[in-house]
Amino acid sequence: MDIIRASHIASVAALLGVTASLSTGCNDAAAPMPTTGAIGITAATTGVDLDADGYDVSVDGGARRAIGTNGTMAISGLPPGDHVVRLDGVAANCTVRGSNPVQVNVAAGAMAEVPFALACTAPVTRLVFASVSAGHSSSCGVTTDGAAYCWGSNSYGQLGNGSTTGSTTPTAVVGTLTFAVVSAGVFNTCGLTTRGNAYCWGGVYGVTPVPVEAGVRFQAISVGISHACGLTADGAAYCWGENGLGQLGTGDLTPSSTPAPVSGGLTFRSLSAGWYYTCGVTSDAIGYCWGSDGALGYAATDACEYDEPTNSFITCTKRPVVVEREHGFVQLGTGERFTCGLTTDGAVYCWGFYPEGGSVTPVAVPGGLTFAALSVDAQRACGVMAGGSAECWGWIPVQNQFSDAPTSVPGGLTFAVVSVGWFHTCGVTARGTAYCWGVNSSGELGDGSQANSLVPVKVTGPR
Image (tube, rainbow, N blue to C red):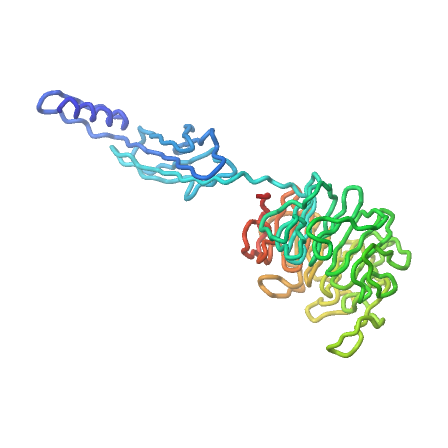
């Protein structure tokens, strides 16, 4: 019995870094009190796709020691007091539950326990986006290799994934098409292939992309609430869809299921399809708008659809009319009777439901900021400045407030492009990472949740 007891004392003493005096007689010699302690570390990992290489453990920033994904180890010879234990080498698809690093107090002659609990999920593919488009309650983006992904509401098949099931993370648009750009609307989404062919899905088109019979190839496309417009490489504008308020700009009120040329023979550099109207900028920097009255930059006079509640005709313009010639524009953005224009010197003017009291003609957005790009939808606009910082104004979703003046997008991110949707906004950084913010009731922010956020959240990879 005495021999077994002496052996146990020796092993504990060795772990704690002390020397014990032993005797096999009936009266054991007293062992010196230990002067150091130890830490017992456990890694417990659950889930899938566990990292076979395990992890690394360090104490107080010292040398790293390997520990298995479900392993244990003891580090001895530690002086009494507080120590910091850190677990490194955790794979991107795994997370540590709780604190890391962990501060623990070590007592002389004792072992402090530090358990690390980890959970792993299937690795998420990082999507590198070239562009993104925020729609009504869905979003879409095109990656740098031409793949199209959509997320959010899919009640009308606007995600293009072959179903009407929504998704809170990006889901691939079915097919083998290689896209250059996509534009998300309310009921449907349209995109252009790298060869300039237009395809649309959702709404009347169905749950998968179908070609738009045009006989022409486009370099830009924009989707409104019930119509879409495309721009060819030589600046010719075509629109298709509903036309009860002259939004196609063809000079009449006849709808068209195929692209119809916008009247006037103008050469455009950009187009934007809004609620029931369209605006564009010609190659000589002149802004034109047509369609329903309220955000055209002038008072429309044509009698168009009959409004039964008011027993009167709704006024509109059936063909492009100049907004004004005082400012040279490079871009016009359209929303819900809310239009903004970016001038050649980087200033922005808005009209319609802007400022908060409304204006028929363009009003300068205050702040003296110089923008490089502009996006408009609903009753909100955002602009990106030369350095990549983003500012937004108009109606603020979630907060239900209206701001005439630009306010900085929180989070400190810099963007290459920004796209405003009906209740949310998305942007892409210079490294191709997509972020979205605003209302998220349908998963349109793409972060795997349905939680609203005023701060941009990262769009996750497909699952």
